[in-house]
Length: 555
Image 1 (cartoon, rainbow, N blue to C red):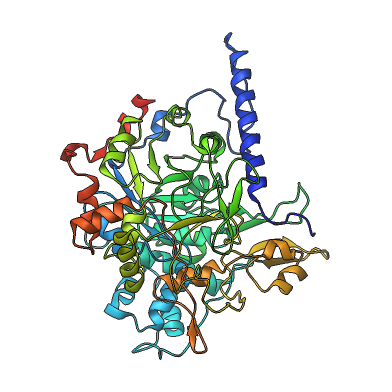
Image 2 (cartoon, rainbow, N blue to C red):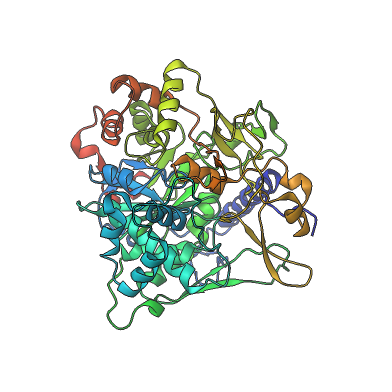
């Protein structure tokens, strides 16, 4: 139990190399079987697709609406909030809300007294009044809690999926998507992390009840999500295999979710949203296209300069010390996705990571992409959830040229490199008081099987002695930061700890040129509309979206 219990950069490197070997073997096998024969390779239990046979065009490009040129990325916990996604989508592009930690975001808004009454307005439209009443009575604080009083905590997720927790996940995801869609008829999307499995099915159901148009997911290989979307849209029970460390290779642990449990005969019609896999390599894109248990509608292709979690470098050990706690990841040519191979898949794709300028948008279009996904420029606009004081400091440093972002290999307990902005009074401030390790939210906890066969949960950022007692090591816990509490602090919802509040963790992409240019154009502060005007500058109106049927012709 004391081995490599967490996925490390080296482990991910091995995965990428293995995928490359499999792909090369498939290509060679196909070349050897061109004389009218087809080679059948089992993809998964629910797929009989033949290798080398292109998927049905109608299956890939079911045209319900035109595809966006700009996707506003799903950032952090509540940075991409409903206000930001609504501002982007109502202008004809695609706004994504962040689906990570929405139960905490939602309940803390209620504990602040529901400023503006937005949560109540959305709750009044939720189709199960009894579920709303229980949640409102539990979490709403009239007038808001006292500033010195800590937030009441949500229940940490477990494989048992207790009713109260499941209902809160359904409702909180419904509320965020409903508010983002309110007042316009354009699609809105939601972004999840594949690594955070326990809330996934209930969250998807809540978002679909609100009519979410797109689901984007990265931080792993979300091959089972398309099938779950198909099942929920048909009101069928669905399941998700849970990764449990310390189990035998043939042992599986499935989470089950039945949407019919929450409705009688009067069930609303659910529309299956488009699914976009967020990938960092052509190997992952090919795996998703071939092995997913349902339709993959497109890809967001992120390179290592994007904010948040990044894929690790393809070469293990390629890292160096930085002037903050943690290890900086160094990337090379092998980490660049092969766009020719992605284009050959015949699916729509968008490029992300330092593509937030009109020049890079034109470049992406020339490379066959539908457009770009942009995060950093939107993260510091007026509508984002980032706290105003952090926005002001980032914009000030950006204007002065002081701003610095690093890719830290050790900060995130997930094992993925994580992009951090170096700021005073944040987790990267070496002069800050040491934070006492507390794991009271647990979104990044990893299920594991202990020596007695019991299911447990551990996080490399929890107290070291607790992590070691659960089978981890001191080395694995070294320099890990609590992203859950830090990201909530970034949007002004940090937990109160006695006389102090949790320090924020501020993440953004590596390229701040778009923010700098936006600040100059708008006299420092700017809006989501300003960002779109900047990105789409000079692009004719009829070229600001793409017909789905035109994508296959580019491949």
